[in-house]
Image (tube, rainbow, N blue to C red; front, top):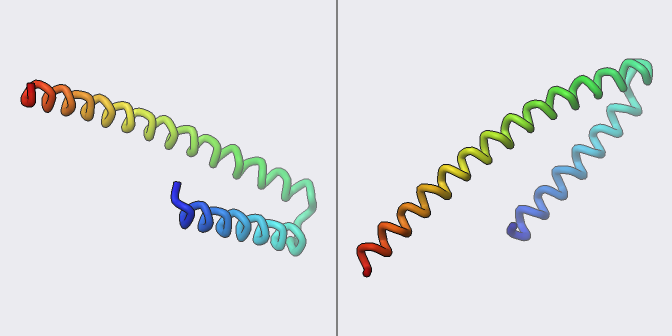
Length: 79
């Protein structure tokens, strides 16, 4: 990863953490309700992340297979 990407992700995660802390400190809801809402959101995003990860894995495996075919084809032409 590039340093710029890592720096941007660090700032993004820090901002998300800071924003989450601000919301938690200023919310009018009870702690139990906030925890339940957060748990539901995390479960939902966890499922979405698993689906996205699965899709990315399938796409990367397909692209790798296509790349291997291209390399074999180029090797045959150069031989």
